[in-house]
Every structure is written in C-alpha cells, then in structure tokens.
Image (cartoon, rainbow, N blue to C red; front, side, top):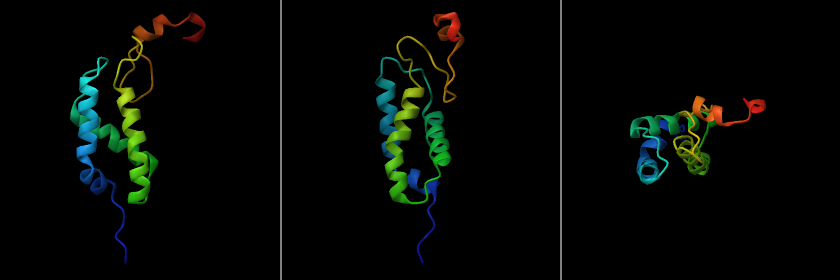
Length: 101
C-alpha cells in the first residue's frame, strides 16, 4: 500500500530549494524585507491551495509557486505590492491614472 502524500513532508524534504530561492530574493535590489519564515509560509499556503496529491505534481508546482512568492515579495518597477494578496499599495495606486484606480 502506497503512503499518502503529505505536503508538509514534501516541503521539509525540499526546504533547501525554498531557502535557496529566499536567499536569491534577499540579494535582489527590489527585496521588500520579508522574513524567511513568512516566505516559507507563503510557499506552503500557495502549494496547499493547488492541492497536489503526489510528489510528482508537487515537484512540478514548486518552481512556479516559489517564483510567484518571489515576485510578490519584491518591489517591481518602483511600484510596491503588498505581501501575497496581489493588491497594490496606496503609493502605487496614486501613480495610476484615475480611471484605473
């Protein structure tokens, strides 16, 4: 009988990859100061939302999820985005034309 897939175990086994991506983000010019703990929680939550049911599916999702979390935790083009909610900060909204606010 095959063991049931556990996301927590999968991410524990791949924590070095997640930590490596976080370290890349810290070196980024546009790093927003997110902590390693918060970065890892965001990766876990997004992986959980995708509901992988096997190591193979989780392994294929992990690079995309880490890239998304990486992007969400950087200031892009001078416009700061808040953590993980995809919403623009008030400062970034003020830079948009009034028809887009």
